[in-house]
Length: 83
Figure (tube, rainbow, N blue to C red):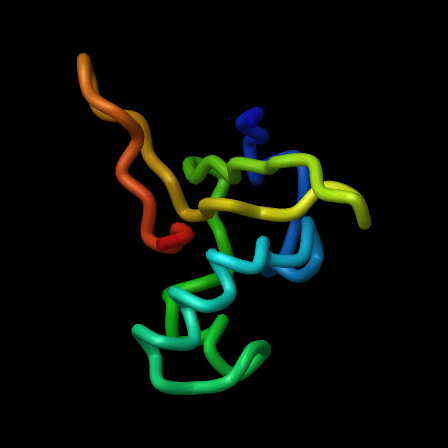
C-alpha cells in the first residue's frame, strides 16, 4: 500500500483512482447510496492536505482509503476506508 498526496491530483476520488471493492462497499453501506452517488456524500473532493492510499489489484491501482490526515504517533485518520 502506498500513500499519495491528493494535491498532486485535482478533483474527486474517481479522478485519482477507482475505489477498491471493500472501500466501495463501505462507502455505499455508510451512505446508503450506490457507487458514484455515494462519493459526494463522503465529503469529497479531497483537499491538498488529504492523503489517498492505493493498493495494486489485477485491473490496476485502486483507492483503499481517502481523505486521510496524519496523526502524531497514530495511524492516519481517513474519511473513506474499506471495511
